[in-house]
Image 1 (cartoon, rainbow, N blue to C red):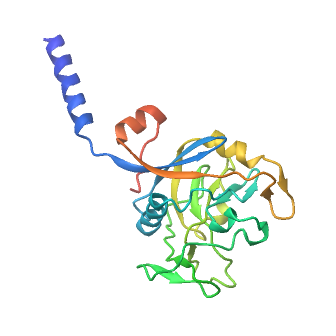
Image 2: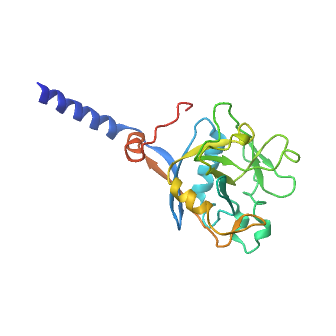
Image 3: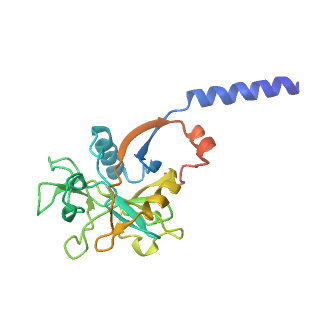
Length: 221
């Protein structure tokens, strides 16, 4: 009877795993390795926007243009593709009147409506949207494409409830840490050698995600 029960348990487990719905996660490829990111359902505007840009190839060839050890690494600016380091941090996707987007007053790029949540904080491995400072952006709208990954072990609580955190790293924080310590220009924290990325959306099953990366989908989902 015990053998039959075990067989039935294995069959049931296999059945549910096989039928389990796949979810989309982000894969950021760099020369230092791959970073896998889970995007929160609790921030649907930022999630949908990031997936759209990734699937269009928008991020491919952009760089991590600002890195600060024991703080964060920032990337996703299309301006980082050109040879002018002085315009890094100023770019974004072209504004076409998409829902939940707002035209930037200084360019034809867009920003996103903020999705700042009281229960989602800047912890180690969080991915959040960069944005302009409060003096010119009092509504705390997010950059249309630029993001940063928190590299500080204790998180960055001084940024909580001020920037939209829209996901977290599933695997690859060792890659983030390698990027954070690269030689850089001290005047703007830009790496001396371009750290380019290729971003794609891949599909995985939550149970396999948990088994391979020990990652459990956050409760606020």
